[in-house]
Length: 201
Image 1 (tube, rainbow, N blue to C red):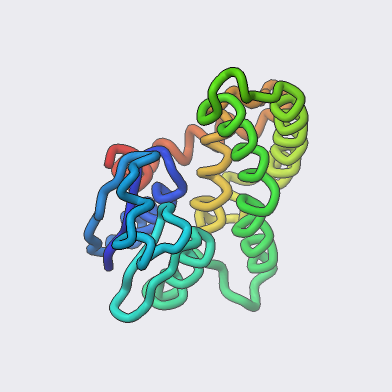
Image 2: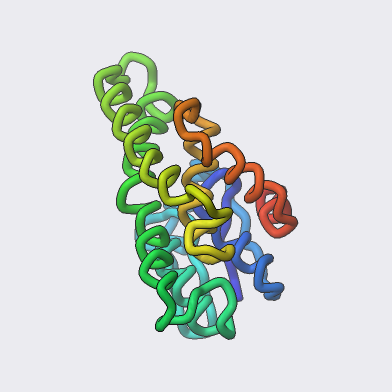
């Protein structure tokens, strides 16, 4: 399994997943914003010129949620995913997709407006709106964690997807003061050896 990877990107999710499963994988490293990601060789692998991308034999996937689902379906052997007949399965699907559908769009706006754009092109209105929306999206995660350690009961792929988005939200300064379940959740995730390994790549 080959993983095209850059630190501080969604690619951490995939390295984290591989580490949780104890899988062997090969890292093809980039740096965030690396111009070589826009060159023809890599665009032939991922037409968006982004990470993560995995190559597994004849299979190439370049969307983190799809990669998590694919890897768990093919190599998970029932790990990190609730049984389909269990009441936790619907919660698992909800939070697996919530990260990209609800949290990351706000993070993307904040990152573009505060990091990637030069100061003269930044729009404070966009930042304020995205920050407000991000805090609202995190409230739902906080509520889902009431009385439990992980989003679908036991640790699962949903925590890799959504948990990583929550960790990034915290790093960007999201207001967690009224979300009392999120800080302990972040601490639990960061304490996992597999996360620590992925975050150190």
